[in-house]
Amino acid sequence: MRLNNKVAIITGGAGGIGHAISTRFAKEGAVVVVNGRHLENITKIASEIMEKGGRALALKADVTNLLEVKGMVEKILKELGRIDILVNNAGIMVNAPIENLKVEDWNKVMNINLTGVFLCCQVVGNEMIKVSNGNIINIASIVAHQPYPLGGAYSASKSGVVILTKQLAIEWAKYNIRVNAISPGVIRTPINEFHHSHAETYEKRKALIPLQRIGMPEDVANAAVFFASDESNYITGQVLLVDGGLSETVCQQIPKRPLRV
Image (cartoon, rainbow, N blue to C red; front, side):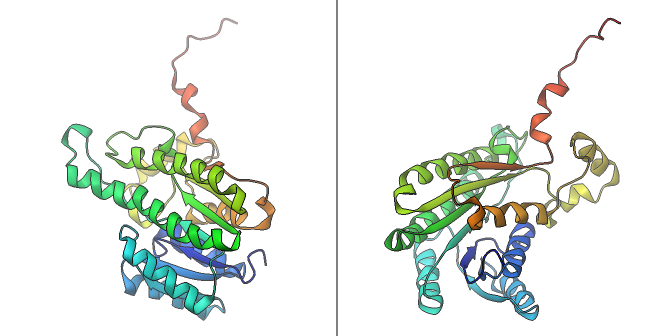
């Protein structure tokens, strides 16, 4: 098993991608700390893992609250002794045109998607620095690299995650802490099932993707296992696009005159 006995925190662990990462890490032998704001949801995921023979702990904490993040880390250290891996997956989106986006919605998205990543990295990172070892994986998005129309603050927040990842990778390399990010593309999760349950929209989305399928949370989990394992021990500061090739299709949208035969 590639993550045998590693202690891993997954924030937003009850969501579609968080659930997949938590489950996959447990299968690879990790002790998984499933984090979220709703105890019932994260307890369900932890129970599922344990029923299948894995090891898991559900810990409620708001990633935007420094005291709660510190409390979560203290509980993990007390019960499990260390933290080897941190996956910052918690995130939200508020759809609105920029001219109508409420300041409170902008702040909410930024607080969870970017400040939450910063706080978890800082608190967990300080513990990793003490032992000169650690692995951090931040979940960004394809829209960190391309603006998402009507995405409000989402693209800006995820772009911040990308540059924060690179900043931490450079500053913490001397402590043997690796920091990488994953940018998922179009992934079918409960949060966007509204779009994918509509047959016409689903087919239009699928047609845009070179690999001709919508991504699944397990596709992101596979990439997370790679970054979390020793197989990537010479990789830091990188952002892996898990998008079926979608981000490479921009030039295909540019109209061209027919070639002369």
